[in-house]
View (cartoon, rainbow, N blue to C red):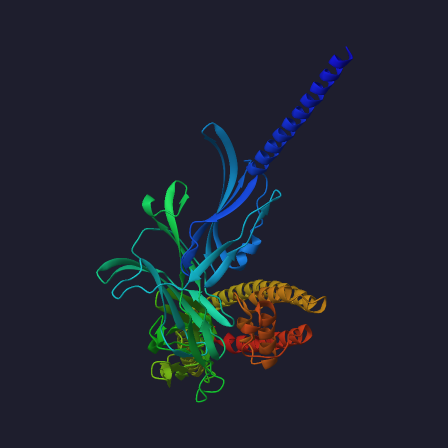
Length: 595
């Protein structure tokens, strides 16, 4: 019995050891399978590309789908530009084996030539291997061959003056279907950039038809020196057949083409020393100045206004660059009452055409020969590189008195003649007084005439009294209106003063200035230049320019280097307000006898 028990115990021990070994093997296999299922792999479609080409990077995490998050691709941006990124989740059944994975697909472009590295990525505890990419320079095409998509960069001149228009053009050529074009906009320091109209046309190169799109920009450099046009990157998405597909978007086949514009540079020259000092700088290829009248100016009459329009137009300038045209007349009998000038910029594929229209009512105070002053605008012809002038010559007109004044003079002359006749008749009647007394019929006739004269005098007196009352009522109403306007203007100016003294805010000061100016001058003021042009005060002009510069940047302050001071600004406005009010009162007193 004892021997039998020992044999059974030995068999049991061997069986238990075999079971443990089998269990360890199974656990090891399961662990290995689980580890093999969770992997992070990075692959590319090519390892050698040109600098103008793109490649597709696929990063796949196996072992699960619909996972949260994604690998950190930030280090990839050191050597590559990420143009497109998408994510897909898939589950596959392969020979009865089910596998699931999440894949991130990135379209990337190299930032430089040489040996670049796609860095290793980390996700869910798994790491991918780094991938090395060789990037070589773009291959030159054989003679007579052109690429299917390319860009031309051009400037319309090799040198320019400061503030002169320079046309920058990008011509995009393509002979294949373009699904999308993503382009960078040019950016510069101290240069005003105005996008122009696009133009499209067809062109044949080496027997191959191309579609061309021109993107044009008008550049206005604000300082002299070397102006550099940087190289830009454009990305064109080309529609491809399935055989030439690189990646798939929304069921279609596309290829991304990375294009570079050319670097350009232009020398910007300073304003010529021979240009008139103090005159607005106008570098242009063509400038015209025209004059027109609403009525024939040879038919001027005293007190009757005639509208005069001056039209200044220039190629290659902005309307804001055009100066004020009207000049004050030296003839004290002539007054100009200008309207708000109209400015317009016409944008064409070949540049900007600026226009400034100024209209003014011309009123003559006295008859006789008057003089309308000449208008002379200097400008620099950039084609001939010479100073030229656009000019409207001085004009002289013979002005007739107004019909009202002529009627008054005629009535006065007639009254004098009637008075002389009446005096003659009275003298004659005095000489015949004895005869009148002895003739009853003549006495009755004389009484009848006297009664008729009294009736006429009474009628005229009543009419005069009625006219005087109407005039008094009109003056009362006008005075009330003037008082109301003055009160409103006074309140607006008080608010402007408060904004200058109580925690000055440049934005609020500028707004209150334009609101007050509209009420004070009786016309819409859209900029501070409309305000300081009403005065010859250089302090006010400098402070207005400084205020605009403080709000919109130092580039706008091209005429003054004085810093903005709210107190000086307010004092200058108060000086303008006082002088302008006195000038208007004197003008009204001079014009009053005309009406």
